[in-house]
Length: 424
Ligand SMILES: NC(=O)c1ccc[n+]([C@@H]2O[C@H](COP(=O)([O-])OP(=O)(O)OC[C@H]3O[C@@H](n4cnc5c(N)ncnc54)[C@H](O)[C@@H]3O)[C@@H](O)[C@H]2O)c1
Image 1 (cartoon, rainbow, N blue to C red):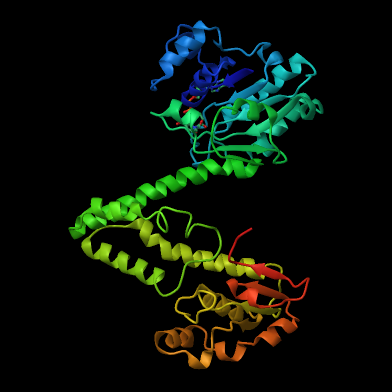
Image 2 (cartoon, rainbow, N blue to C red; image 1 turned 90 degrees about the vertical axis):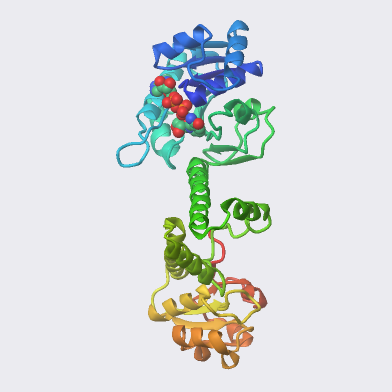
């Protein structure tokens, strides 16, 4: 295939060399005359293992060319890949100037070329904020091409996951391929481009693809920060950070795994909040500042409140609500620090007519810390707990499914159920 690449920095130049090495013909376009000259004279404009040889091979075979101008290059091109920079703007957002400029340049080149037999696939690989394809890029193409835009171009968002230092290896073995398209359907040119790359492929709509890179990079930052916070607490406490790390990462069942990692319920129960507080204390007592760990309980409280808002969305105070599940886990009566107890408290305080169904909980049998917690947090519990028959009789404006307890109920079709254990 013939590919045009816009922006010959780390991402674009790597893509250029790797794609050419697979036999495709690549024209690279950059506003920097110096970069273009270097590529033409087989000098890599960036230092990255493996690229120098691929460049020499590509130029010698006539598969790599570079220019500062698009000219008529796009007329017989199957795929354009945009890799221009998106540096930070002063407010922390990305500066979209280069993206907007290159979108306009490509649209104008397509217009000059006239109607196309096959639409040009334009894949944006630069990191851009969600909404960029729909609110910036597509309007530019429509402004330049009018109605022909829908016929002549297909915009794809394809985030880049390579790491500098291992860019060539990462190009051919990425952790995943993410493709965002207007309707979430696959794109033929991208399928052809990635035919020889083995990786899980996710085809989705633009916005999910656009946010992927921010989520990944922020998670990586969380990992580094968490490891370092534990490291410096260990350092202060005379504990081997290396040994603790080794034990921690060896647990791929609960620690380094998708467990405890899905958007939905808040954390709670008798262990997590207590032990997070204890680690905060241990670290502070040793003189180690652990800002990330310190933020966890506050973030969890914020999440509980957002779940309350989500649970009552569209309901006016006074509405009849059934909360299915009040214990932290279905089938248990441990109410200590259950986020569902907090939710019930918030529902009552906001004036909702609340009843609770949780067959594992018998308020008259609670003892010890469990009783103490409920007594001070939700004193009305005994009065508002209802049995299965009443819960199923209906008449509620909404049933809030707080845990798997809801499965014990045979609810009539059409009952408004809101599952707060899993965000949509
Ligand atoms: N560097 C990485 O490791 C990496 C990894 C993943 C994603 N990204 C993202 O990819 C994008 C590119 O990153 P990079 O590190 O390659 O940037 P870079 O600054 O090294 O290269 C960008 C290139 O785009 C060129 N350019 C600007 N406007 C242009 C235009 N109108 N036409 C043609 N060329 C133009 C610049 O001259 C420059 O050579 C960024 O959004 C970045 O966040 C980078």
